[in-house]
Length: 235
Length: 107
Image (tube, rainbow over all chains, first blue to last red; front, top):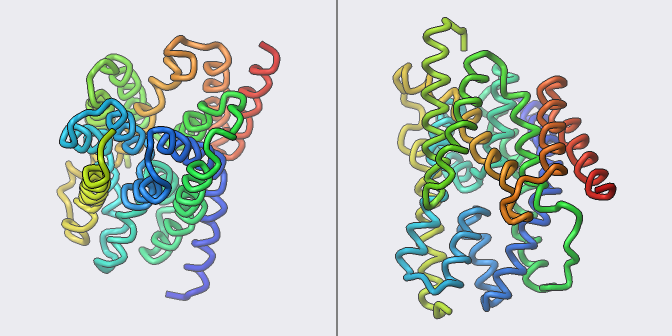
């Protein structure tokens, strides 16, 4: 395995991960601001972003801490929000499973929505990559996403309320994910899976603890798998 | 307000739990072959979870208190359409952001 191709995979990943900086920056700063407002010290806020490294779960935990929910409820609810990470883990295992255990540990720690979605999109688009190239690509995507998550959390915690609320910034996250959905819809089975997932997500949005997401995710996966078999689609 | 010990208990439990969820399959299954029916379902994970994550945020944005909003709907539609037609993630994000900002300024 030439080091050169791993290096070029890494930089290709960096380039593909770069647009997410526009999402991660404001999102992390917002967490820093809200955590400080909730009375957390800077090192406690940083502890959240470095140890937990999961935006939605961190916001959930913070909100429940603010509401003085029992510790166990805070932990269980935030973990429920993160259950989709187990699905990402399963989905990326056929690609990164052959790596040595310590590298799989690193990949697991950095497995967040953006790194997962961008990497899986690339692995499907370029299926001929070696495991080393795939891991290098993953680390590349992670570089402009995860370290900035720490840095911008810190800036938010320190600068506090001095950040001006900008135009529709709340919508940067949906836009970043929406942009990836189109290229993912490679076959009719993928389109059916996505459609089923949207319908289920909206129908079950009322479920507590983000459980609607899991119903929609599992339902979409089953719809895609069924469509693949029934329509005789080559994966 | 939760006290410091409880706070760190929450942080560490969440960290371990989140890592456990992320490591579950990568670490334990690793290089072992998974049955074909499992792989067939896993092929659709991304395309089932990401739209489910986004759909409620598009239809009921938090910033408007859950009221559907023409600006955000237009930006979402444009982002998806460009991504679908060009297969280019960058182009889709760019157009989506442009629609979002220009509609916000006009409306």
